[in-house]
Image 1: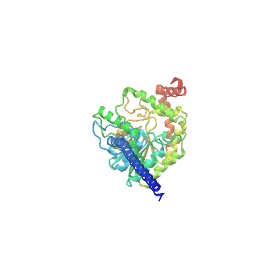
Image 2 (image 1 turned 45 degrees about the vertical axis):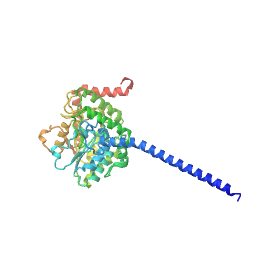
Image 3 (image 1 turned 90 degrees about the horizontal axis):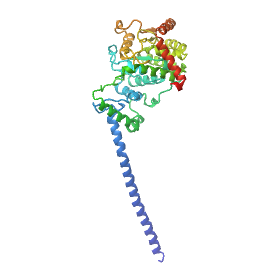
Image 4 (image 1 turned 90 degrees about the vertical axis):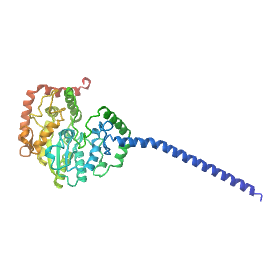
Length: 405
């Protein structure tokens, strides 16, 4: 009997401590809940804001004039939104290539009307592997893909040109947006900044075309003609910075061959052309000592498939550099007007409207004569355009002497 008060006392203390612990747990849970609500509300608000503004067109949110119709950050996120457009649109005809094709080939060209919808799937600065993967993505989402028009560029086959940072294998050959892309397009700080820029640009340009880029076609707009020569300088300089040590990649040639094979396997009509960059772009290649590699590249690709070549000296590519140019925005990007001529030629549409010297179908049978004529034509062009030859040499020299640039 003498131990009973002690037992009761111990039990009482245990119950008291248990009560205190339960009260503490309730307070802890309430605090966690309050903290979760406090942190979630701003995050949810940011997410809803980004979805509504949709600066990359990742969610296909409706565009409203003066609110979110102008999206200045969309162009630099083409690997994201174009992958999603393919899922939504399921085009029957696709245009492949680099920013030259992206800015130059119009999907609404009349010669493309037979197999709609048509989509410009060209990307900024891709290598051939990236292009192959986007074609495979298009095939995975459209089993009845009928036509591919592929604008190839010499730089795409450079062994040092890696996949761009925005390229993601995980989003390709899917039929829905990935969780990673959904989260990045909803909650990231970069997207929040892009939404802000979208609203500002939409307010500042209330009458700007809100269908820009809907079919993947994004030509240069509102270019300042007074800066044409400046853009030429910048484009030539960029080539030297990125490709002065050019090496032709065998894996990228294999990817090119795979693109041709994919089209054969899926009964897809394929047209390949070499983009009609300006003569100074050719001169930059010559200045790096890679002219013979350029010729070898053309030999290699025509072993795989006949190619329409526009990348030589002709009445279009030799347009004199000035602030009143009709054919070019810079040394590599041709205008939609020239893109229309390219499509006219390769699709045999209104051939009589195309300059007779613009575009030649090269094959193993005529490649050597074509290359020989190009060499001879370069000498004529160089004699007649010494200032443009000097421009290229001067840019290269300044890059080699960075203190003077």
